Length: 282
Image (cartoon, rainbow, N blue to C red):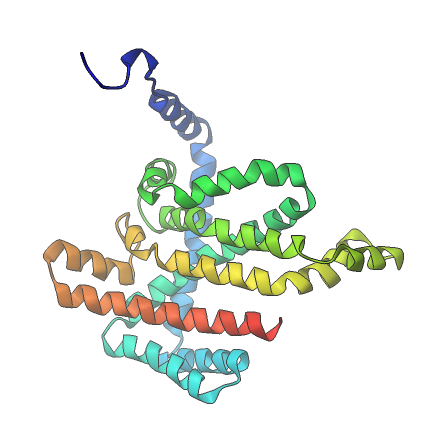
């Protein structure tokens, strides 16, 4: 007698998922291709813009941004030194490619995540419905949703952006909703009593008070986007993750370590600047 799970109770919905993806490709393939082309133009344009900038000008811009955020000359010099170290390792061009991918993915996260967090904070029913979806997005292995993304958008930078968006979006939505939910309702009621509209209450009271939480969510989204660069390199997105992947495939430990440390350096720069802006507005 078998101790396995009863076969009569087993089922599979793989065929239904495959039919749904085939239906999307058949009916909306042209629209998805148009979206893919436009996003690719934005991504390539940003990469070209970063390449046109002299290396010293980009480092000076990062240093000025770090000083404005931290108000510390020493910390700003350390962050600039980390980026300069990436260039000294011969990874400057790959750094620009990774930076462009992270910036576009994070920009999409902001465009989608903050409005969605506002809606969830204002609508409890929407919150109960969307939060389980965010749980799935955050815990589902990246390679699972890479399959339909590749079928819809093909290989290259665009599916890497969408895969990163799916992975990095939940923290921003959650922390935006959390920050708005923790605002003292009496403040909003007082503003309403003074004649402020809903949009004015949101723009002038709710969002400024929730900004530290929103910045924390943005910081987490950027960190998760950087953690996807190696996965993105597997589907055709170039950058620092490409060298990590090449080091794995060729057992070149040194190459993998150099690229991995470059990713860590970039993550430290973005993390320190975004955290400083969040603390400065608390």
